[in-house]
Amino acid sequence: MPKILQLSAHVADMIAAGEVVERPASVVKELLENAIDAGSSRIDVAIENGGMTLIRVSDDGCGIADGDAETAFLRHATSKIRDAGDLEHIRTLGFRGEALAATAAVSRIELLTKTADAEIGTRLLLDGGAVRLHEETGCPNGTTILVRDLFYNTPARMKFMKRDSVEASAVLGAVQQQALAHPEIALRFFKDGQQALSTDGSGDLCAAIYQVLGRQFAQGLSEVHGTWDRFAISGFVTRPTESHGNRSHQLFFVNGRCVKSRLLTSALEEAYRNQIMVGRFPGCVLMLTVPEDTVDVNVHPAKTEVKFLSERDIFDCVRYGVEAALRQTPGKIEARLPQQQPIPQPQQTAAPAPKKDFYRTMNAADYKAFLQQLGKNAVTASPAVAKTVLQKDEQIVADQVELPLPVSHAPQPEPPKETKQPDDAPWRIIGEVLSTYIIVEQGEDVYFMDKHAAHERILFEKYKAQQQPIAIQTLLAPVSASLTPEEASAALENLALLETFGFELEDFGDDTVLIRGIPADLDPEQAQAALSEAAADLLAGKHLRAEDLRDNLLHTVACKAAIKAGWHTDPLERQKLVDEVFSRDDLKYCPHGRPICIKLTKSALEQQFGRA
Ligand code: ADP
Ligand code: MG
Image: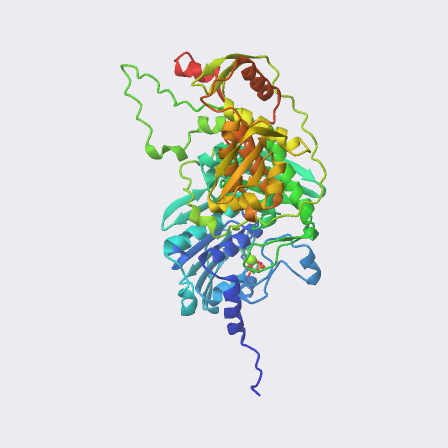
């Protein structure tokens, strides 16, 4: 029998390091958490070569007393937990007491620290966890930790590191998450000597979003604010028209901690159902506040997964919170006209043309205007807007969930109905242009309404609300539709289902299907096209839940039954469409997420004509 020996503390640290310290970004995350726990109001992070040769984190927090400095690097050394009972109330972020020990085990560390009441600071050097030097030094209050040559003594782990640029992106992601979680802390990030991010520490989340994620993201947001049972949600979500191609712009925080959660992703996306284009995703920065005993944040030491004890309530809190925010979003999007350049006066030199990369910088006036647009009138600090960093998808894509988990749909309480009245100024139809857009005047605004998008949404809502199957009109002469073999078999396997959507079909052999009846609103000329699209929905919907497939089929029927752009529409029909859209406030986008109305304001026109 081999003899059982206890591992030396050093070997144990190296093993722990493998769990906590995966890559430079995980070191930065831990060091940032420590700096935040230390009550800092300003933190600087710098890396060189993706963090592989140097990571430096400086804070102005409480510092470490000279007598505690070496202890802080011992395994299970923490000032944050005293006994097992404390585990129930994990208020601070880091709490395992092993981040410093694990990092020190696989790098060379320099610590400079001073508490406010100490006369002089402490300097500590460690190599692979062993203390090389401990001396007094002059330094400001707070703590600076330098981590050099990460994994220098674990070549096996070093091999797993990606290109420096990839590691740097992951570090940036970690810094961004903390910057958003803590708008009250002024955070800066320097990459190889270049400043790549800076927040002003004003405490305003909207300002932090702008400084961290850029102007374009910050401009198209709706504010979320709500409570559900013991859970509270706040933050910002993108409007349906400002969707993204992937989920990398979805950031969720639970009690200040950035987390991954399929539950949260699917609750968010549920709120956008039928308002966003297929294959497009909403973005968000959402903060959930939940009682500490209802969440387990410690599923894995280095991971950010959470477990909620009450999933249904969390789901509803997010879903209804976001839905309420979207309901209040103005549905009629304002036309974006190019800014008029002031006409240069003879004695003045002409203003320089805006640069191509201009769009991520904003002057103070622009910035205030966009904050006001978000309903935030109080701008306190002037934001450091000079440089915000371009967010590459790869940066956080790795941290994102691939697919939303289907959530069981138990009967749920109805959300409180909106009491907001639609704008009730009278409207007047001016006419129709390009056989597509109906022009309407209301108050001081002019609207362009896409008649197809409007009709499609109205029909979709009608079908969705009705309990019975869609009414069928029997065709005088059945139409034979030749489909692809896959479409034909999908249709024939779902005859009963298709009948509830208004299609009465019969197998005619050889991938041909005989259409005997079609949805009542449909023009018989559309029969074949509608069926082939419905069959394609069935094929694509194999892995969808029933409810999503149903919505897709309703989209298809609504789209085919709706009046088309280019068709002649008689004035009565036009009036009916406009009245529906202007008297209801739930008709904002077509079921694919395209806007129904675009607004041109009087002031935008005046500006263009040089009257303003
Ligand atoms: P934990 O954060 O889980 O307590 P760490 O290994 O990360 O464990 O840190 C050990 C201890 O070192 C902390 O509990 C804290 O007392 C001290 N410490 C670490 N970083 C800082 C810092 N930036 N400022 C003040 N104290 C710190
Ligand atoms: Mg810690």
